[in-house]
Length: 291
Image (cartoon, rainbow, N blue to C red; front, top):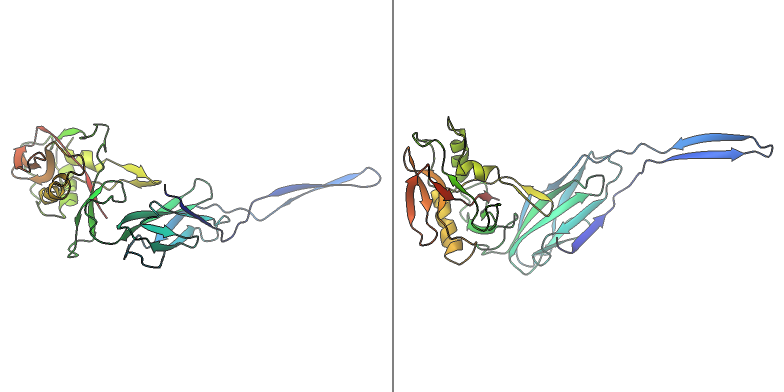
């Protein structure tokens, strides 16, 4: 993690018991046990807002970290930025943008117990295609027209799975003789497609499920919101990453969009050809997420 590390102490009450022994001149003694106020543990921490967009060099924005419960004894908060060249954070949760475009994850963690934490994403500057996203993958699409509730799409990092650099292979679905019927090729449809494939009657295995169950941890934050890209999203990944020599793509990849009851879309990353392949054959895949 980056070196931009700060601590903020709001208050601290420790649970403490003391045994006081008093010895008199005649050798008699008395004992008294005293105990301070009961310690109240931290059960959670929440950071607001979850995402900030800042201009290069912008002086400051405030992040708020709330300890749960509010009367917890140990209110020590540790602030840290994953990339101080993109954005720094001080002991009060005030973030300042740097002069390098990119994405930084600011983590606020509680010093109590198991170091409970929450995070915010700081998006600094413009032209972030090809830059690293919060989960460590590469950003390949920006919703510049605000058509969706998210701003960016991020591909899973190369080597995202134990399958190696190119990732695992999977059938599109074990259900090869019936159409899901609701999948779309549009940008923004990948998540809904993924859920529909998994929900299809008779589903046991699919590229969609392999994407959906994937998770990774980065800077203490667990990212488990991946899905199989639609045909349009996969095409953007090819154009903005593979053509630019980014992302480690070589093999043909499944899209979450089907063409018929037994055929589904795939993208050949070697030359950009769009394919329509039988659902029962093995193809590579690369999960994506939105933020």
